[in-house]
Amino acid sequence: MPDTSLSRPAARGFTTLLAPVLRAVAAAEPNAVVLIDGPSGAGKSTLADAVVAAWPGTHRPTLVRLDDIYPGWQGLDAAIEQVYTRLLAPRRAGLPGQWQRFDWVRGEPAEWNRVDPQHPLVLEGCGALASAHEAVSDVRVWIDADDTLRKRRALDRDGELYRPYWDRWQAQWESYVVRETPSRWATVRLGVDPRPT
Image (cartoon, rainbow, N blue to C red; front, top):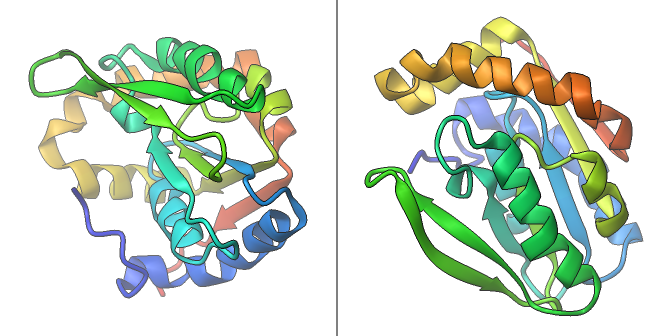
C-alpha cells in the first residue's frame, strides 16, 4: 500500500485543499457521507486519508476505497452499481451497508465488509460521483489535476503493473464522464497545481 502521509512533498499541497472539504463536512450531518471522485492520479486517496485524519466529529469515519471494489480492470460500472445498491442506499435508509472486496491477486471476489450507518463514511475512487449517488450522500468532492501529472502519479504509485492497463481504464473513465458528468454533482471542486512544491 502506498504511503499517503501528508508529510510527503507530493502530499503537502493537500493541506490547502483540505480546508473547503472540512468546512463542508462541518456543515453536514454528524454521520455524513463524503464522496471523493476524479480521474486516476488526481489525488483522491491522499485527500481521503487527510479528510479521515482531520475529521471534526467524535466518530472517525469509515473509509472505503473503490480500488478495493472494482471487479477487475473492466469493473468501473459494476463497482458503481454495487456501491449504490449495497452500501449507499441501505445506509441512507438507516441500515448497515456493505461492500465486497475484489482480490486482485486471485482475480476473484473476496469477503464482504459491513459498514455501520451510525458512523460517517468517506468513499473515494473513480465513479464515486455517479448520478445515482447524489441523493444518498452529503458532501461530494471533485478533484482534478493536469493530465501529465495524473499519469505520472498513477504510474509512480502503481508502477509497471498499471502501465498496460492505463489506456483501458482511461477509456472506461472517459465513457463514465460522458455518461454521468460526475463533476456536476460536486459540492466542493478542487484542482491540483501541477507545479512542484
